[in-house]
Image 1 (cartoon, one colour):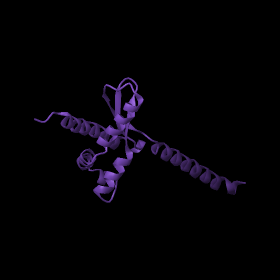
Image 2: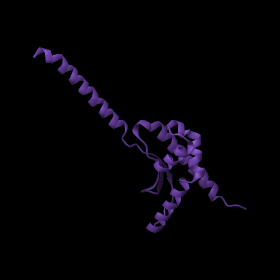
Image 3: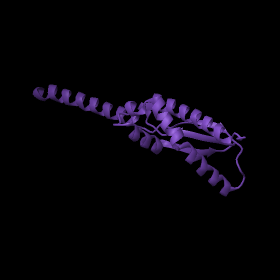
Image 4: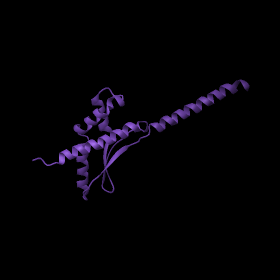
Length: 142
């Protein structure tokens, strides 16, 4: 009985350590989206709302917005991707545009909990860049 006591304790401690590592890894890989809310006047008609959402999604995912955010944030290096084009594709995959009740537009980014600092920074830059591009496009030209 005694000769199994020490190996049993060691196995139990290793099992607890492995379980703790597994739980921590699961928690760190949970989804953690971040977004910027922009107040907007929304149309009452559902078809116009869907058209507006599609148009805004295309504006957010345009090269002018996405590429500038990738370059400013150096996402290729921070996400360990081989080049800038891979970072652009990954950012396009993660971006979302939704309307929230109360007349708010949510422009955000899906990320993992362990990347919260990067995700929140990129979401803020994405919202800022979208606003500057939208203001340029809405100005009348003379």
